[in-house]
Amino acid sequence: MAIGALIRDLRQARGWSQGRLADEINDAFMTGLDREYISRWERSKVVPGAFYLRCLSAVLDVPLAVLEGEVKRRRFLSDVAATAIAPVVASDLLSVGFAARLRGGPSVDDWEAKLATYGTEYMSLGAADIQRRVSGELVVIQQQLEDPRLWSVASRLMTLYAKTFPGSDGSRAVQWYRMAAKAADRSGDNDTRVWVRGRAAIALGYEGAALGVADVLADQAMALSEKPSLGLLNAIYGKAHAAAVRGDVATARRLMEQGRRVFDAAGSYEQTSDYAVPWWRLNVFVSLLAARLGDESTAVAAQDAARRELPASLPRFATHLEMHRGLMLARSGDVSGGVAYARAALDALPAEKHSLTLRLLMSEVEGA
Image 1 (tube, rainbow, N blue to C red):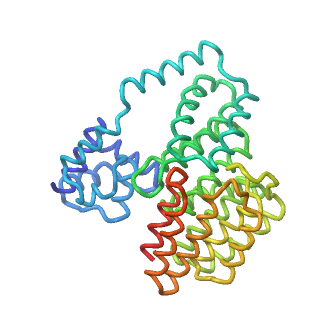
Image 2: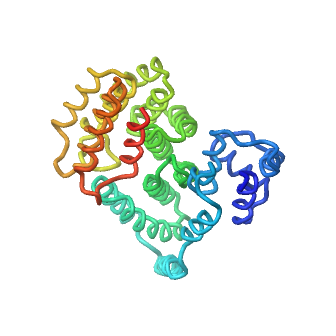
Image 3: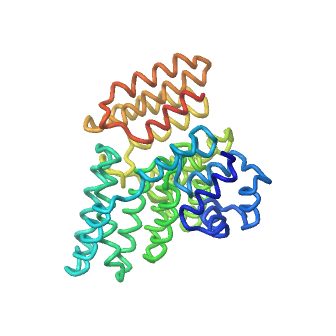
């Protein structure tokens, strides 16, 4: 099937006009597409390049392989059908939402306690479990958004929810990060606005996914406030990782040093929350960043520093560090050895503790 006809079928399956598809791509990726350009794709006058295939993959929520012609149309249609929300699930979500509205819902303090719990559990639980539970919480909190403080809670829940989707394989991660940023703006709380954008930037930058979006969100966070904070720290390291993936060594090194200064002023004492950046977690950021830059001495020092303080209850992050070593080996020229090392580290971690980020990291090692 021609790519143009496939794009048209995907668009029509969502009930979107060509203008709507262009707007969705523009909103998510800061491009300048218009309806006529979509029309040219669909009429096969122009074939989308690699960047726009990734954009289409994200906004249409389909695997990139489909758009590249690696999956036949019949299989694709069955995949799309399988992603639809089952009626019984939709019924349960609607019931939860209306029940929460009738009861008045949890207080702001209750929601903050929930956030703290999810922040801790995210560090050790699988993405699928967190995604199911947070989706239910989002249905509840959207019934209470008359209070600006709950926009802050909702934006942080959205950010966590976004992290349960892989950022580079046609998932909805980018849309959720952008929606979270808009929700944070509704809160009127500048710290939340910076944190949500920074957390999204480090997630995408670390994954090596949607680098343009990572840059935009990081730049927004850095423009909102220069005050040292965890949001600013995440934004700086997210932008540093994006620069490293692109091969911009000078920018990545400058940002790495800037981030270290921010950490010295704002680092966390809390050790096991996704809302925290303690010393060991900073060194996980630095470990991968230095591995991407080919700076073996800095990477090894960061790995050793992280291991000394990494809580034993978080084996997934120990796996990250081992896979960074695999990436270093692969980048130094021993590709097969690096892949084998990273694969062994991933296989040693129980499957239920695997994360989407680890899978993306494995792909990076394999493609080194």
